[in-house]
Length: 390
Image (cartoon, rainbow, N blue to C red; front, side, top):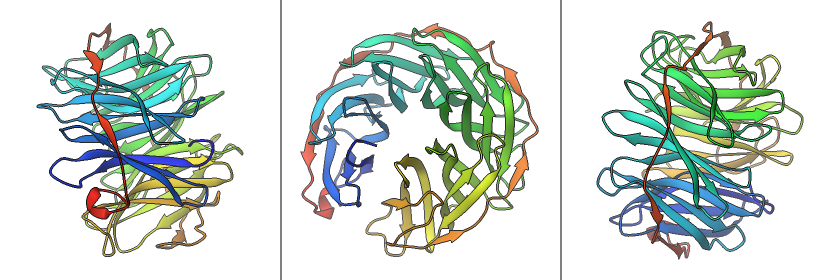
């Protein structure tokens, strides 16, 4: 979200190499600008955020050998590139998440050596590195999402195979502004459980993701409330016999939690939005966006008195193999018009009966991932589909 609109980003494939793609929409959904960002390799945005000065910070992956990551600063008014860094030395680094906070930026992702380790880099406002940290155990540990911590620092959501109760457990970290680990927790049962998204307010942390250890289907959505000492307030599953997943969550001005996700399998599924009470974790409303085909909302945000959800779709009237989708609804998930329809559907909620467990056996250490100046450029889209533009 920027002062005069909404910015969404991802990847596009106009030719032999895929470039990162970023698009600014006005308050009525009109395209204000769109840019391709990249070089000679393939680039894709994984996450973006806006800072108080109106700049957009974006992170993603560059496929050079086993891959490196990038971080860029973009002027929200013009779409111009104003700063960039390349992170990693071709040994598997990748950024999944970024936030603008504490006068700079935090980015998180994973780096692969003998196993996959999570890592965090803190940048100042000019993209100079202030510190780096890794979280590591005997197996794979991934970091997926970040949220600001009141008083400074961040809350981090991820997954671990190194510690916990099952195959993969959800992982939650509290880190202060100087890179010190305040606490670490795992959550899960005997199967696969992951924390994919996190948002914060002054009195609680809210976590979304997936669980295969609890619930009614092969995989259910996961929603948890946690206090700032790392204690579980409540945990719920979301879904019935189909696969349901929570990809993103936010809070509106009235305090309701807004979730975005997907229900169904890879052949036929619908994207959904839902509102939940943050005190109890129980549903208030639900809305399904369901043309025939495959759809997912992997980003959901509150913009004033509206909800904006973004994701991708593979339906009969798609222009390519997979198209972006962005919708705006009221605060109960109802659509004013456009493609598809919104169907009211209150989510099914169950109790997820696992505690949070201490994860202090994971190693938290300084890191030394290579950070260098980048040489990517931006290309102004002219609206021609073959150029990877809308």
